Length: 130
Image (cartoon, rainbow, N blue to C red; front, side):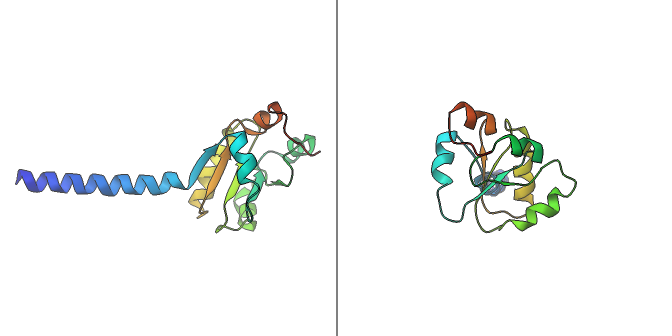
């Protein structure tokens, strides 16, 4: 009986760990250097989740603005292709982390979140569009 209980426990643990791995594989926190490289990949969708006012003061080239704080956010993200990877960023990382969870919950296959956000991008001296 103890052996059977142990097998059951091990089996359930493996299923639980496997499910956790699949979920965490959908979201990847990336550095500025990593983002520079992956943003060059074909089909990558780059999204600035800051407010339109923040976006207007400067943003990463080729980023589209979908405001996370907008009441229509859930509807607006539907314009993105769920089958293609998405890179998201905000000013420092807090909003994009929340946004990443929403994207994954909405069925996006791969979400990259810029560690440190736009502030880190600017601090690194990388190109900014106005």
